Amino acid sequence: MLVLEWFNPATLGPLNWPAKLIDGVFHGVMPRSGGFNVVDVGAMDESTLLVTIMLMFVGNGSAGTSGGIKVATLAVIFLVVWAEIRGHTQVHVFGRRLSPGAIREALSLLFLLMTVVVVSTVALLATTPFDVIQVLFEVVSASGVVGLSTGITPELPSAAQLLLVVLMVAGRIGPITFASALALRERRRRYDFAESRPIIG
Image (cartoon, rainbow, N blue to C red; front, side, top):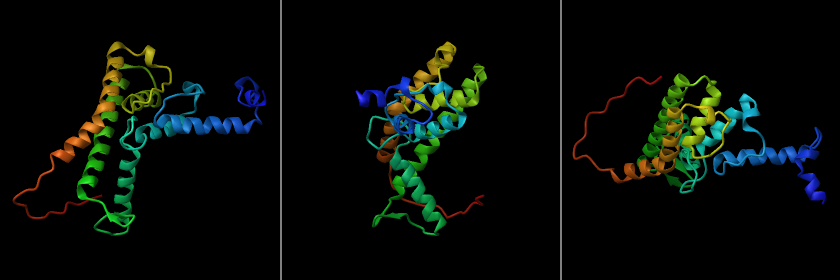
């Protein structure tokens, strides 16, 4: 009985921080895979929505059922940046060296998903009257196969809803197919060109 009262939403007061902490942890995990919510997402602050968008964009672990770029991809990109900051020509982690193919796959997957999110967000903004943060939330939730919504999906026009459906399907099979295709298409050239260094930054 005490446990039921502890987790009963009707008894939550301003000083009942353990239950609020549990809600926070729950909403920190669910955007990465499950898509369940115990708090109205549409009533969240914009900063909370932005953090949730970032969690949905990354997703869960590799080879899992979630969407997004996956945690391993984010780790590879972080290690690449860290190696560049330290002036290393190769990326080392846990006594191993990351292959150039894995680095190219991670960067390509990140760029591809970012492009899909940006193009879809612009398309929805041009056809709907909603705010950027709401539209971006819906797009990232669909492409990340999360299932969370701010509540604007039923009010979207049919074309926008169809776009979200396409994003859901692409988000489920797209990253795996894309990464596999990159791995299978890798081949060595029998010749090479002279090296060139463009101006970066």
